[in-house]
Length: 357
Image (cartoon, rainbow, N blue to C red; front, side, top):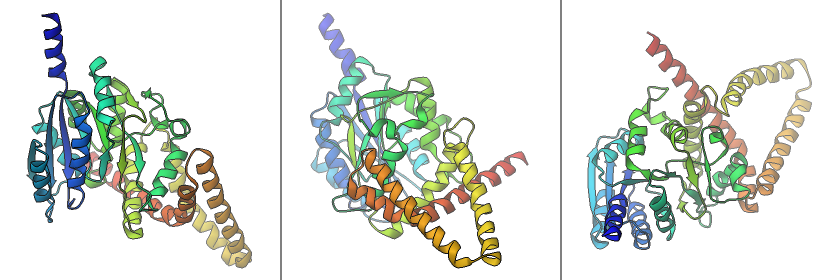
């Protein structure tokens, strides 16, 4: 009788709801579901439901999802809404989910085969834990993806220099990789965190829900990470898409980290100040001094910075080809990321002014 009771209790805790926000994901959503099904087969989760939230798609991604789910005998629920952004799509999906645990995953993300097996075992002993995925970028067919992979080794060097199972909380939150790309944990805890989120800006498409929501979870229970719970991320494949994404990342950086106590708060402030002062000084120097010498010194400084960035990324564990991509595209990235920061700052200031009025 005791064994039966324990078995029933375990089963009641390991029901997994997967929430997938989707916008024009044709060609990706089917493969995402296939990798999910493969990971579920070896896991200790007893039930699986998938809630696909179509965020105003204009392609055939919903049909692709339904066909794939039928072939996999997968329980799929499709929720449709007008294009309102990823955060509100996830909120809609969470409200329709029923599992004890929830996995948030995007359509360009492929879970690795034994990931759910590993994390399911962790939930058996600690059902309230929340795990963020160890993300590996697909670089074999898309060298541009190596840029983000290399920059992560610099920003989150405490983990990537020696990836291992660990847990971080509020105090060291800004020093470890985290995201809602493949976030998994207690459905109640994650749903409450999403429902309580209030952006610092009025434009929800530029709101950084990841950082604020994860920071609140880290304050409550901490967030775990391990190479054994991992996934592959398929990044944008063209330079144009890369730059558009860089601009967006710059904007959401402001919403997530230009707040009291955040690690990058002062760096953002210094960038905003420096991006105004330095051009003024450069123009003054061109008018009053030898412009050729200034141009040569600036070019040498830029090349030196690119080389230093590449060496730093390699030293911290990045592959050489990723480090070289980081160096190659860093000037373009700096421009578009910088304009994104200015975009985010202007949205933040305007939103604050509106709320005061």
